[in-house]
Amino acid sequence: MDQSGVTAHKPKSPWGTTATVPPAMSTCSLADVMSEQLARQLEEENHNFSSLADPSVLLLGDDAADTTSDLMLAQMLQMQYDREFDDQLRREEKKFNGDSKVSISFENYRKVHPYEDSDSSEDEVDWQDTRHDPYRAAKPQTTPRRGFVGKGKNITTKHDAVTCGRKNTARMDNFAPEVQVGDGLGMDLKLSNQVFNSLKQHCASEQRRSAKLHEKKEHSTAEQAVDPRTRLLMYKMVNAGVLESINGCISTGKESVVFHANGGSLDEQPVPDEVVLKVFKTTLNEFKNRDRYIKDDYRFIDRFTKLNPRKIIRLWAEKEMHNLSRMKKASIPCPDVVLLRKHILVMSFIGQDHVPAPKLKDVVLSSDDMKNAFCQVLNLMQTLYQECHLVHADLSEYNMLWHQGKVWLIDVSQSVEPTHPHGLEFLFRDCRNVSTFFQKRGVSEALSIFELFNAVSGLDIPIGTENEAEFVAEIVALEKRNEDHVQRRGKKTFAVASEDDSGEEQADPPFKADADD
Image (cartoon, one colour):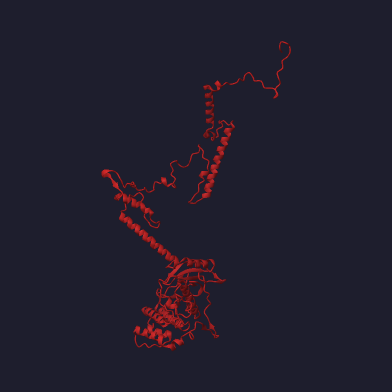
């Protein structure tokens, strides 16, 4: 109230009444803010907060830790969560890798914290980084571009023996991977220029030879290896269920490779439990005289050609199939034909429990059994010639097996008919092999070569002389001059088909040639 007795009213604020400042609160001046005493106070408070925020203190779970700050609680919870996350990540990594030798690390996904003690040492070397590999070979010291190092008497040129030797040793790493250069780490090896050049030339020649050999094996059937086409045919037989499995090679020859296999089923018909796959070699390098056995055979004369070796081999396999079929009709012990696929002939296995029957040359028989074997061979040759109208053309102790007390004939792919221009010559050669073998084994009943030939062929060539050359000359002359003999055993009398009891001709099993690749 002023002197006039009129009360003075303060103007009203549109924002309402303003709060009065209490007398205890006073405004802080800039000088007080910048004072050293206030700065020291703030520094002490910050130091106390940092000590409380130490992870080692927080994670100990000490009740004395200050948990009144929201920031402090958030940091403690986050650290605990990260710790559990890392533990779970380790378990997942261990479960994912298992016992595998090649493991995958989840290290990049882990939460790294200053409080965590690593299990691995800081000095541990990453062996995938070859820059720190202590076993890495040291590079030889190279000479500068000027060609020498040092001065005066200590000068060393690029032609120094020690320098060149070490450099040549290091250059051996550039050889092909299949060249075994050894492990010279930690050894001060020095190769002279002469030795290094010889090794280099040898490696180059070996690479060229290996490339040629590999190419040859890829395009032909070698000793115990087959080309990709043959392997594909064998795989198809297994996939089709004809064969259960192919066990391995049991025999090799100049014309074929024989594999043992377990039979399956063919067109709902069971296949023998044990069969053999006779794979005819697709190269003529080792058996160049095949054509003389097939080009004059009237059964294949229209299909024979020298231009395509693969077609010749297929004819060769087909020829053995037809010959075996004839022999089986005459009850001659021989393998049964199961299937023919191009140049692969599947036959029954002569033997038992994966053990093939021994060849006649390898079996040990008593004198009575050997005499019995000769009588069987004589009857087989007569039946083969007179009923099957075939000459084995390669009969010997190597192509006769002894199984279950009987002689079995195999390998008849080169067999020809007696009407062949050289049929009688082939027969005489078979008689010579058989007679010589049994005479060496002490069979007194074994016929001579000439007697055996007349007994098998039914001819009556005089045996006035024991000279083999003269007897062969008589055979050759007989083939050329005796037209009546040739006509009696020609196509009309010795037809491919044989007559059964009904008088009708019974032809060989039908064969459908596979399409050419």
